[in-house]
Image 1 (tube, rainbow, N blue to C red):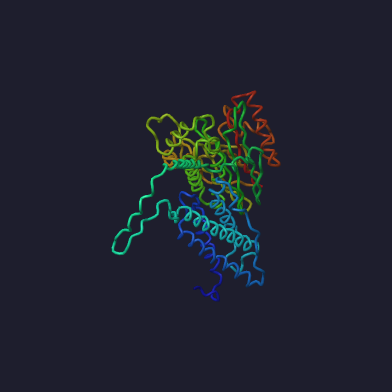
Image 2: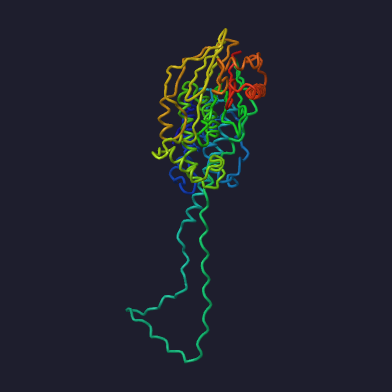
Length: 488
């Protein structure tokens, strides 16, 4: 037992460490019937959560504040299979967001807002633990052997010593008994339920296709994506940005045109990079590895999805399910017979992490695969030089080839921006056939980038590029995506 009377400032680091372990365990939790969580995992989670709740409620008591009673969250029982599958990861991400927002150094200094947020997440996770416990109990009852003894054949009675009872006297002869009706055939077992695969509905919310703006003190970011001129079907470009205390993480991704599921891969890569970089701004290359890890999880989930599942259907498009599965399996482990087939879920990614301090903005830029990076610092724009230029093509993708491609991720020296300076991330299609992407955008719209206003202004710029690309194909050709940082 811990002596609460001796607890002081070091309690907050201990609490945050415990919650970090909880988030990691919940994120790795599986509540699928095929691989239920073990009782030991659940009990260890419950123990950590109860201790975290004890510390937080002790803080409320110390401040003479009532213990908050948060409203019950989503009804777990009502979730569909796809949402249920990803529920632990969503709740773990919410806990990490609350945990990363804590800036205080001691438990006594913890703001009421932060304490309420942490307490609400802990209570919600305790509710999850109780629900998972009930699921495990139901699964155990379902798998238990039957306990009802069949009475179809009554056992023969035996006397002491093993002597059998005397046989009955033969019944008098009479008309033959009527034939018994045939026993009904047992109903065939129900067909196994098809695996619905991952829930991809959240990736349909494309704020980049409408244009968006993100602001923090000292720097603003705009991002937008478009299918591009003369495009058929949805676009392969994606862009995203996430603000964090003192900075912004920004990314632009381009799906490989011949890769299965490339559009989805670009969205997953851009969003994952930004969220991972915002959580750990000092290591953008680690955010690239996190994005590749998310593509790995997506590949694994698609391989188990049913042929008619919504997840596999939207990824394979018009390709037959069997052919799509073969390409997905080839992505995980290359098939010599498919050596000319590119891996699925492949894209190029360029990302930047910008931090504002002392009137300047320091941006670190990384790239894996195709992408354009240019900076305007006190004059004309110029390309941002990367540490190395590799001749072989590279891409961000899951599987064996994708893991090898991580070694070709490039990092540029830090870019320092003064007030009025800007940094542009763009897909290769922006400015294709022109001296540079910056020149193409500035020629198309002279106020670029200082004239950008709300988020929709970035999307309107790409609409101009689409119209210009129809008239002048060499200037803009292909998926269009931009991300702009402007120091203020």
